[in-house]
Length: 135
Image: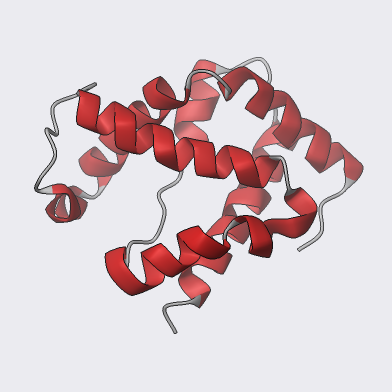
C-alpha cells in the first residue's frame, strides 16, 4: 500500500505526539479492546487486566511501539512487521485492535477527518500484513 505525502504527514504528526506515551496509550487502547471484545481477555489470562495495570501498560506499550516503528517506515511496512506478523500468526493468532478512538481522544485537534482517513488506511495496512500470515 502506498501513502500520499499528506497521509504520511498526518500519520507522522500524530505519532510524534504518541512517542514517549506508548504505555499509557497502549493500556488505554487495550482497555477499549477488552470492553468492546471481552472474549479477547482469554489471550491475556496471565495478565493483571485492571485498568492501567503494569501488565497492560507494558504490553500495550509494546504494541504501540510496533505501530510507531511502522509509522516511521511507511514505505516498508512488510519489513517493519515481519517479526511481529510471525508472532501473531504462529503463536498469538490475534488480529490487532483499532487504536483510532484512543488517538482521537488524546489528540482531538490533530485528529482531523484527513488524519483519521490516513490512520484508518495505515492501520488497515498493518492489520492486513499481520493477518496475511493466518491464511
